[in-house]
Structure formats: structure tokens, C-alpha cells
Length: 131
Image (cartoon, one colour):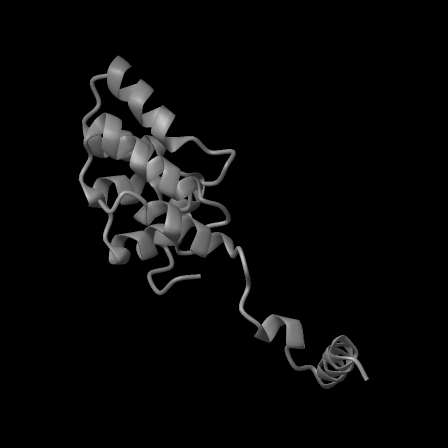
């Protein structure tokens, strides 16, 4: 029998037994967290630890793009940029929010970070041990 056939048989057996499917046991190519991690590390200015924190739970490379943008244009510290950009999704734009609000208000950076970070960030703070 062909190799692909056995994969299907094992996947069916796993499903019937309530085990993870064989395809789920293989490494995921193009996983969004890893894509984000790689995007964050481009340019070498972000440590692996910060990149890993930034991209935890990412669904795209949006957190990395946000991080680089605010570091370049707003000169935020790593922890501030992480607070602003972690959990950002493509429909969010925390970097633009922060840059526009900073240019047109008298709020301090802490208040601006709270105003502009993604909505999920507030929820995640309530779960100190992760999702």
C-alpha cells in the first residue's frame, strides 16, 4: 500500500480511538506563531525571548509588524512595545492608534498604551498562567 493510504488509516484509527489525528502530530508548516516569531527577529534588534513573548498566541505576523513600527517611529522600550502589540490581530492597528493619539493628546505613554492595545490584552491579563 502507498504511504498516504496508511496515513489515512492511522488518522481514522486515531479518530475512532479519540487520539489526535496523525496529521496533527506532524510539525505545522507556516504556523502563525512561528511566522510572527521569525518576523519579529528580522533585523536582529529583538531578542528571541521578547519575540517568543510577543508572538505567543499570534494568528499572524501582525504583532511583529506592530512591534517594529512602534520601535522605529515611537522609540518605545521593548516592554512598552510588547504591551502594545502582543495579541494584535490584522483588524487591530495598535501602532497607528498609539502614534496618532500621541501626536494629538496630552495623555502619558502608559495611558496611551492602555488605550491602544488590542482588546484581548485586557482579558489575557486576567489569566496570569496563559490561555
